Each structure stands twice: as C-alpha cells, then as structure tokens.
Length: 104
Image (cartoon, rainbow, N blue to C red; front, side, top):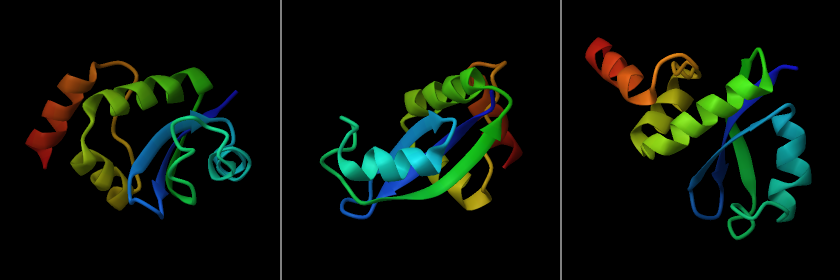
C-alpha cells in the first residue's frame, strides 16, 4: 500500500509537524485538527503544506523518521519551497544532507 510523507503547519504557532499516512488529508481533518494527536493537540488549526507519495507506507515512515531526526527548519522550508523531498530510504540522512548541501 502506498504511503505519504506530509508536513503540516500550525496556524496558531507557525510550528511544523512531520508525519506519514496513507491519507494525509483525512488524518489532518479527523485527527490533527480535532485534537486527537498528542503531538499536535495544543497547536490546533493545521494546514497541509506538503505531501509526497512513496511506494509503501514503510518507506514513507522511514523518510519521516530521518527528517524528524535532522530537526532542521531550514531543510523543512526547502522541501516545502521545492515541493520535493530528496531523502531516500537507502542512505543515512547525514550522508544525504552532505550531498544535497554540496550540490546547492
């Protein structure tokens, strides 16, 4: 089953939330904006800024974890601006970042 990496932004605080799901739009409406997700319940009113499809939910979750481990607003802003996440399942995030920064 295909999965999606997605990035939400809180209209209240401006903070980002990174997640993965088979249906990000449904998850936003039914869970995030109804205070049913622990990580987002105090920053309600989110908007979906980015989503990217992956062949499997497992792959989208691996990319989600890599992106969360980086803890970089700069990288998240670039993904949103480019409308594309260059991270892949194969390489560790640190090696992918080095390649991306050198190419920029």
